Every structure is written in structure tokens, then in C-alpha cells.
Image (cartoon, rainbow, N blue to C red; front, side, top):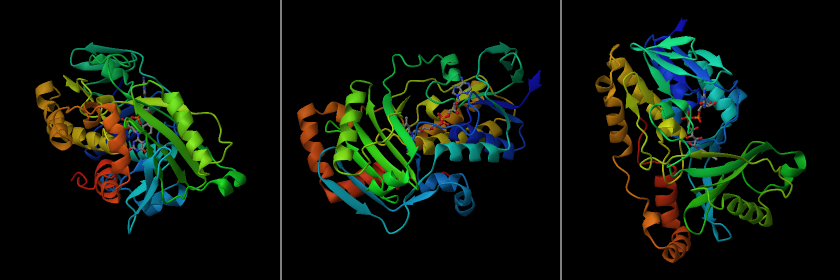
Length: 371
Ligand SMILES: Cc1cc2nc3c(=O)[nH]c(=O)nc-3n(C[C@H](O)[C@H](O)[C@H](O)COP(=O)(O)OP(=O)(O)OC[C@H]3O[C@@H](n4cnc5c(N)ncnc54)[C@H](O)[C@@H]3O)c2cc1C
């Protein structure tokens, strides 16, 4: 039987950030992931500078062999509506490719990895968890994303009884003709909201790669909204007409709308498994990293006492960081016809777009990186 101080299920940004910190404190950490890395992940691949800072990423070294696209402007508006461009004097975000970013972070974490191995079974033997009958650990960390099996162990009804955002996306390398036809600038991602404010689409160029997608609350009419969005982008000449038709879907819970239990004796959840994505933008990489780092600090402080009461500082600090309880999204409490009128007016305002939509909802400039 293999043993480790902590077993992390899922090697995405949540799992690898936690592993990296725990390894820094000398703990023996194993990361189990059902995928072989590098693996792709359905994601626009947009990270904010706070994420780069918290990960202590050497941007220059990273960018030498991977895509790290600085973002200095945005084009925004309603789908089929007027467009506004908002520029910043320096980079306010970066575009990465998840296949590169996640692989880099997982390798750098220094954890032992078990890749291409899904979590199949978990048994409790005394104070130890035995996973897949082969790995024993006193601490099981669920970082397996939205459908994390450890969340199920803690009672989550995955895919049922939870209101998730569902999204579809494609990322592909453009051929020379497509590159010539694509009017999206690499430093200026484009974001267009649905009229009911219940979702938005994006078009994001990273070097020779183009990432196009749309996400909405619930899963009603996603394909129609996506089709309409792609028509809109094509008609405005933003994307080539012949982009591949291989969109991939995924889902996430917005922070404050998730009712998942995050902690029990010897087990806790991180990142998307815990439902931490920012509700306004769906940004989930930063919360995933923060939860990994906050959990690691709580684990180290707990010594080797992993009972729920010793680890309770973890959910307490998450709440202090992200805010306490769900307030229903403002959009949900406003009647549809008012929302449509408001959406047009607000997204036509340069002040609202810069100060609220971009600075607060998408960039979280008011929230400094975790110390
Ligand atoms: C379409 C879309 C676009 C997005 N764009 C952005 C964006 O631009 N910026 C941003 O900040 N956020 C974005 N997000 C959110 C972001 O992708 C997630 O919040 C983030 O990936 C969460 O990280 P994580 O480590 O918690 O989980 P994940 O990155 O999902 O990693 C989970 C890992 O667990 C593994 N796993 C799952 N099940 C098992 C199992 N049974 N056994 C073993 N391993 C398992 C998976 O293989 C995976 O490697 C987007 C989400 C979607 C759906």
C-alpha cells in the first residue's frame, strides 16, 4: 500500500496550488488525476495578475516556451449591439492555454503524481482514507472540478439540484488564411453579453490560437445562444466563417449559489469542486488558486490533527475572503423586460463598462492578491 500525508484528487490549478504549498512545508503529497498531462480543459484561459503574483510565476521564463498573452484592452457590448473599446496603460490580464498552464503548475508543485488514474473507490479505515484500494492517507483533498467525486462523498448531488452555469467553447490553431481573416486583436479580448444578462460570449485570440465560447445560467437554449453568437461574430468579420465545429461543454457553480459541504473529518474541497467561481464573470482560476493556498495554510496549522474542528479555519477564511452568503444575483430579481432595457443602457456607458463590468466584475482590481 502506498502512503502519503495528503492525497489530492485533481491536478488543475486548485490541486496543484495546494500541492505546491504543502510540498513547501515538507509534506508528502500525491496528486491523482484521471487525465494524462498535458491535458486540455474547457476554459477561455484568462488569468488576472493577482493569480500570477500568488503563484510566484516567473512570467518571462514561462512565456519563453508557452503562450502568455498580455491583455491591455477589451471590446464589450451586447450581442448584435454597439461595441465599446476600453484601453488600459499596461497589462491587466493574461491569456494562457490551459494545456500548458496546468501541466506547468502540476510539474512545478513537486508532488508525486498518479496520472491517467481516476478515483474509483474510497474507504475509511480508522483515521485513514484508502483510495482505489492502493493509496492510504489521513487527508483527502477534492480538487476534481465541478464533477469531483470527493464532493459526492461529502453529499453533493452532482449535476442535479444545483443551478450551474453551462458553457461551450472551442480553442483551435488558426491556419494562415484564418489568421489573415480574424479581426480580433490578441491584446483585446471581446466580450458580448446576452440581452437578458444571464450569460455572455467571448472571443479571445492567443497568438495563433482562437478561443470562442458562451456560458449561461442553467442549460436552457445554450446551443441556440451559441449559434446566434457565432453568427454575430462571423457577420462582423471577427472570426473566420470556417471555424471547426468541435465545441466542448462544461459547467461550474457560482460562488454563493453552491450549497456544497466543503469539509469533514480528514477531507475538504477546493476550487470548482467547492463551487467558488466568481458569479459575475465565471473566473474560477483565481479562486481555485486562492482556495488551494488557504487550505494548505489551514492544513499546516492543524499539525496532524485533521478533524473537522481543526480545519474549520479553512471555510471560515474562504468566507472572509469571498463574502458570506448568497445574495440572489441582482439580475434574477429584476423582471426580464427591465433587464433588457438596462443591459443596453449600461453596456453603452463607458463609465459603467470600465468601472463596473471590467474593473470590478472581470478584473477584481479592488481585491489585492492573497498575502
Ligand atoms: C467554458 C469555460 C470557460 C472558462 N474560462 C475561464 C477563464 O477564462 N478564466 C478563469 O479564471 N476561469 C475560467 N473558467 C473557470 C475555470 O476553468 C475553473 O474555475 C478552473 O479550472 C477550476 O480549477 P480546478 O482546479 O478547481 O478544477 P479543474 O481545472 O476542472 O481541474 C480538475 C481536475 O480533476 C480531474 N478529475 C476530475 N474527475 C476526476 C476523477 N474522478 N478522478 C481523478 N481526477 C479527476 C480532471 O481531470 C482535472 O484535471 C471557465 C470555465 C468554463 C466552463
